[in-house]
Length: 273
Image (cartoon, rainbow, N blue to C red; front, top):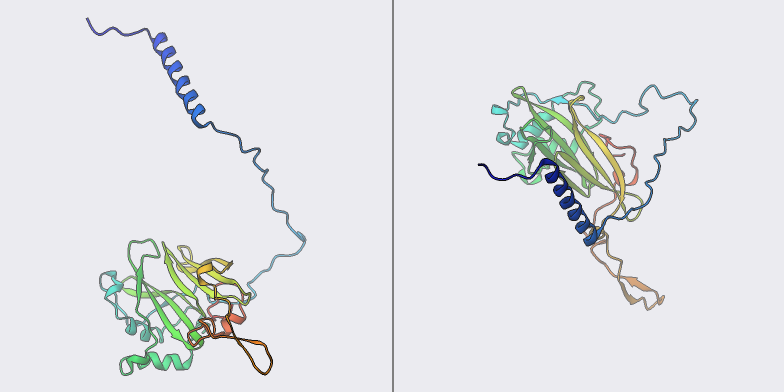
């Protein structure tokens, strides 16, 4: 004879009682409480609905433009095997589809790039970084090029069919450049004290290029805010305390530039947004 089993109805009743006891115990320990009614969703209200929509963009910022880099082969699609200076020099000969010249480097910077082999100390090409920004399992090459007025040209290259294609090109007076997941984030000064711009560039598979998908103006984090100037000894002639030099006014302080003083919407390849 097999083991004794209770009737199905009895088993069901016992399970229900046990479950109720379990739930009651949980509720006693820390029962859930209502947070109140959720706010109702409000549909956006269109302003001036009779206003005709624009038929074309007012400015050409150069975002979405790509360029094939001439003379550069990428064996095994491994951009880590490329020499960044060679890439930067070859990029000087690249042409975009529209060839607008919006991201044209200053003549002085171009001369420095061409002379990187003979004058390496003045070479503006920074050490490269690598990250899979397109999600295809292969790293892209991220290059930074120093420019006058403490601006930085930023370029991203993708291995493409055995060659190299530039999928992003912009420049700005930057506070920092960061890689976060598959986003490339640029922080730039704002003319509003205590605020900064934050632009995230992301791969767009439809455009086959990096696009500025998020552009924000945010409060500057506390750890990056400049300290208040300290008051030095009073001027004997005027009796007015003189501000003493600090990190915010010293030789290493960021210099103001055109990009920091006049900024237009994100994605500008001119550096003045």
